[in-house]
Amino acid sequence: MKNRYFGTMIATVQGLELLISDLKSLKPVERVRKELPVGDDIYQHRPLPFSLVTQLTTGLQGFLQLLNDYQVTNYQLWGSEALSQALNADFIADQIDLRTGLRIHWLSINEESYFRNQAVLTQLKASKIQNSQTVTQLVGINSGNTTVTQFRGVTFNYSTNFAIGPVKIAEDLQSLRQNSPNSVEVLTDYIDSKLNNVERSVITEESAPTSRIILLGSMPLSQLARSKQTRHLSSTAFESLFDTVVDGSDQFLIERLGVKESDLQLLLPELLMLRRLIKLTNAKELVISDTTVLDGLAINEAIKAGYSNLHFTEQTIITAQNMADHYGVEPVHRQLVTKFALHLFDQLKPLHQLNARSRVLLEVASLLHDVGGYVGAHEHYLHSDYLIQNSDIIGLSNHERNVIAAIARYHSTQTPGTDLSHFQKMTTQNRLQVAKLAAILRLADALDDDHQQKIQKISVSLQEKRVVISAYSNANLSFENWVFAFKSQFFEETFGLKAKLKQRSVTAK
Image (cartoon, rainbow, N blue to C red; front, side, top):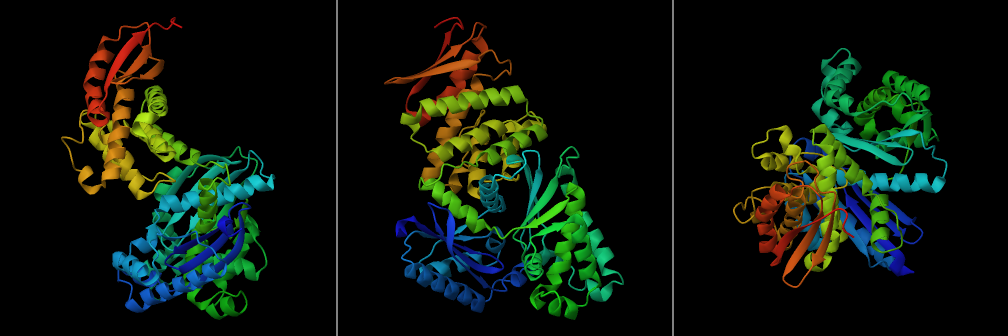
């Protein structure tokens, strides 16, 4: 039984959390939280004091003892992106390692959203009450960031995040109540100014029969809802709650509504943000969920261990497609190149020996390799590199996003042999991964370099000294042969085999 247990730990700007899960049933066995006032120092750009680092490591030692009591030997520690922004984050990670033996794995905002989404979607699928036309906005709020992810039924539409959260607002405007005659009005204007770009991203679907917000990771409002013994609020009930908080004194909020004194400065910014998002999304209901990143990380571990066959990578792929649309990438070309790249990856597996995750990275890179054309056609691959590195793609770590950017950079004329700007920062294993995937993408792109779609189907033959790619087409492929001969040189340098393009008639069997 103990081998089915998995311990998931996370360190955030709110403190520490531990979840022990049964991977087979995906049910929680134990959940423990330890609150620590870490965020104040981070958002005031101060390093965490040694005393707080000691409290972090002491708390983790307590978690390790609990894991030992349950005889759990499979466990992992993650850290939130907000905590990774601490001035002394490297010192924190080193001290945790030295004192507990735990190596912290930093999550990106996009990963945090992705794992929370996994947990909520799993719950929605299990409940079997989700209307296929219901539009759901998953709103993840942490101290300094807010993420909005939209689903219709259980189908992913889009995800966006923005650097604004209750702690960050409170830190930016800590003197507002003393200096402004109408702090609510000024704070509302402040939040609206931050959400201007979000308004263009958040789509209000008026045709949806129902629209709702599921709120994730919101500590002050979540605690307030517990005190009122409700997890569901209509938009009208939310407005009533908002008016109560705005009109209530600090003493009233503490004594009558059960708000913690430490959360007083966070509650109003959080409610104002939600109020704006409710209007943007036309939500009729607000559902407050206890689901956290840890629930999604446990599900992800269950998938890796073979206990679950759930798949969530469509969120990453659809986000990449949305991004390609945004930057005007020609859809037929990108889909054809993606089809060729994935076919080559599957057929050349004995040669490259990369895992399924690498296939996902190749698919995203294939969809996005031409986004740089939005900036300019000249050296568009350099622009693609920059745009990918600086874009939000749900489900990707910062490292994976950089890998995809490098693959896109080398899909055209440049090769790592002449440009080492990325490779100098990568491990040998990562360099090989980028080189192999870039070499495959170059071949796929060469097959439709003129965007004329002369080739619709290919087959691959892996021979002793060469790889033969048969292109089924009745068109003149002189240009494709010329481009293929150039772009295949890097493939030969990477794999040690020459790639040859062979034309076959579409009528050939």
